[in-house]
Length: 596
Image 1 (cartoon, rainbow, N blue to C red):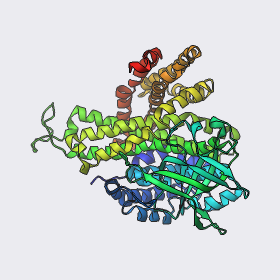
Image 2 (cartoon, helix red, strand yellow):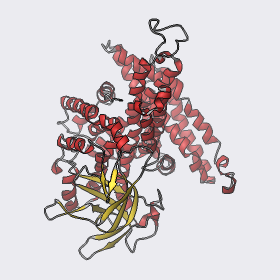
Image 3 (cartoon, rainbow, N blue to C red):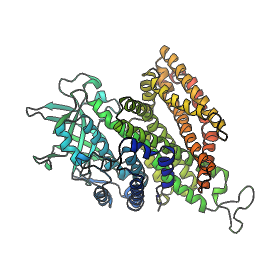
Image 4 (cartoon, one colour):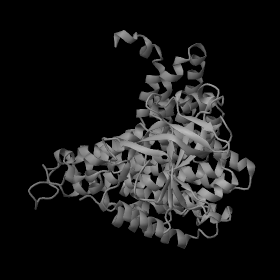
């Protein structure tokens, strides 16, 4: 059975050496997050992920969830693992102190989330969505709503969901039909059907808090007429505890390709009692708080499946004997050499390693931005962090899941025929990872968001804020004695990024289809350049440690070798995306619908 061991050394390299989380915590007054405490939390998180959750990954996939009379039962061991999670305080780590949280920084929470999701992604979705639900209530709820729901969501006593899409509308939420009728007591009667609701019904917590998009009777058409409602499975009683059952039910659970242990529900609301959160007809703005949280988490999913796949693939490649090395026997005492000696196997493993470690650096950088946006007392600093997060979120979601699926596919390929067999775990990683490119807004939607709304919509300001940072880094290291050639390459790509954006914008002024035609290739180009930036950040630090005479020479030499592989073998893909963009919209729009 596949195992998972949290890559603590690589995590600490980013936390301590590349991004210096401790300095940030000190600057924001987060004195409780001392290096010793952070280290202890990481060690215990690795143990919980590896010993409690990882063993449930395959069994959960094979057993799946079951439904009877609208009640969903999760696989064996899931509920007990969740109770450990709550009792040990994992869910409350980053929650506010006033609601039973520990007040630890979001960046530390993200590190633990990576461990948990890498060990068992399906299980991680049950508590994972609660964080986004709590964030939306915290940002937009009344004080009464915060006091009531956050005191239950923060420790994990209750879990949360987001109920957006419906059978007929998919991503186009302006078409939703769910209705909310105001009542004399200030509540609303919510009626409608929502589909693809992750963890909408389960047996792991005593109550489930649904955030539901619906329209008021007099709502304007389209997205301007959407409101957001809190609709709990059990209505809170006068003391704030679980009270009478609300009029909502899980109609069915989906039979899915992957993440089978996560209940994906059809939820039917039939005059269910709901409570307006935020302003009427401003629900989509409120929901974006939760959606952006979920999109960063989905980007992490690509990394998590990729890491788990890589760990198994490396172990297998070291043990599996097949053929001899082209340069002669490496293991002459054995009937064949381990497949890790073969160049093509190394190509696959290095591709997996380069994407995993680059994506982890990108994730941890966004984690720092979350801390900055939440804790900084400087308004300009918070605004900068929020703008960078807005710009990087679609890149995280789409690029990390596209490359994450590539990594898991490569993991299966390393195993050869055994990768296609269930017992080795690789086919599950591929199945589980595949959804990450689809939900929380397909990657095509993310690409449109990046190019159309974030970059062109800001007249290039969001892009320039990031490329200015890359430019400064390259300029400061232009004459680096060992990495100079790579800095010149990154600097040239950074200039090309701006020029490419300008050309797309000029063409779009004549034909708006150019934005849609260019968007996914533009996002992928952006992702490759962004990872190059973070790989050089890691390489600079690795070289500094080697120059200082580190005792961990092998670790840092491995970083430099992987950075070189990324620049020479993977980064050239960026130019293929440029060529595709330059082909223009006409290559996509020539055919009529009937000609397909």
